[in-house]
Image 1: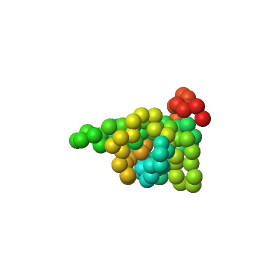
Image 2: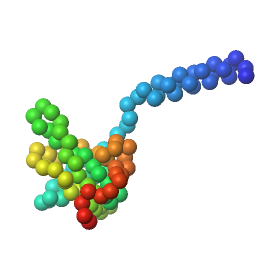
Image 3: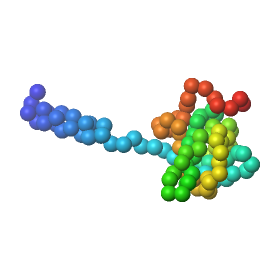
Image 4: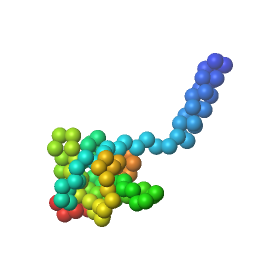
Amino acid sequence: MTTRLTRWLTALDNFEAKMALLPAVRRYGRLTRATGLVLEATGLQLPLGATCIIERQDGPETKEVESEVVGFNGQRLFLMPLEEVEGILPGARVYARNGHGDGLQSGKQLPL
């Protein structure tokens, strides 16, 4: 290998090491509607049965409410909360449970 190629490969290795230290990117949507027990979110594309987290404010702290995707219509997801929803605000952030965007777990949480 030439000296120039060696320098380039070293630089690429350094950048790769720095990229590994960056925090993971999390895609999220927003809560747009709550009707009865069904919550509606936009901005995410997840399959039926995916597990989502909805952020809610509890004083100065941000708490998480787990929910499951039970339906969709166009760009809207319909979520069924698996926990108490008190304190959830319009526009709350919604993201996939595992943080990688697919939200899949080993099995569905609701019997649908």
